[in-house]
Amino acid sequence: MRSSLLALALALSAAAVASAQVADLVDRSAFRVCADPANKPLSAEDGSGFENRIAELLAGELGVPVQYTWFPQVTGFVRNTLQAGRCDVVMGYAQGDELVLNTNHYYTSTHVLVVKADGDLADVDTLADPRLKGKRIGVVAGAPPTTHVARLGLMPDAVPYKLMIDRRVEDPAGQMLADLKAGKTDAALLWGPIGGPLVKQRHPGLKAIPLLEEQGTPRLVYRITMGVRAGEDEWKRQLNSLIRRNQDQIDAILRDAGVPILDDFGKGEKPAG
Image (cartoon, rainbow, N blue to C red):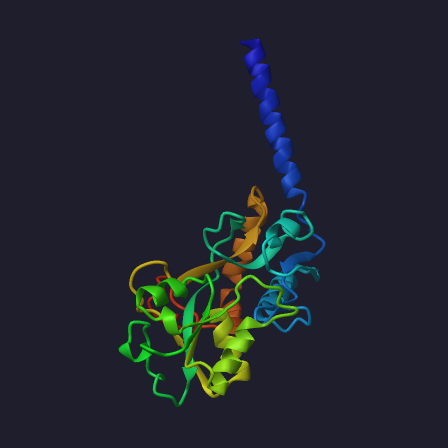
């Protein structure tokens, strides 16, 4: 019995030490962000992304500077940044992703169909619309909308663009919209927080339509959180508190950028204020 109690005490002590070691990785002297340096409009090394602006807001609330660890958002991004202890938070991560511990979500968004604002597809709001048959639709290979495109028989005419690339040397989202504007394609499918801001900031002749009516899986609507290391529950709670207290300002940054913000159920636009 005594040996069992001793073993239990040692195990609990080791767990406590391990927990403390995880918590100690968070640097309280700076708001250390893991980010892609060329993932506009989300993050950019020049600070122009809307995730940069949200990071500045939260750092200001904490009274510390923002400090970045830059790494392209490709395979190995989390391993080489957050998990390596080089930074403490990823500003945008889909809820439920097992690579990180998710905070509460701070916005909900969806994929968008981008078309010419004055074209014959300007009022299309679902991929099941028969007017899309035979159209050249730009798709990001492997992204959730491609399954819907294939199921609806639209894939033979689709134009694929790369997903996991180093955006310092390639810009698939920018190329998709440039091709659409030039008439090389008829529409483009993009993640709303990318497509919405790019249309608003660079392509006033285009229109980003949130896709809210798609049937079946995979879902196109996602809740977006901040990601921290597993076991850093105290840091997660602190971030949750910051999100809650600053939600209106976060919403204002997202809306100003052009991000389509939905209600928590993904059924419609979130009311302002």
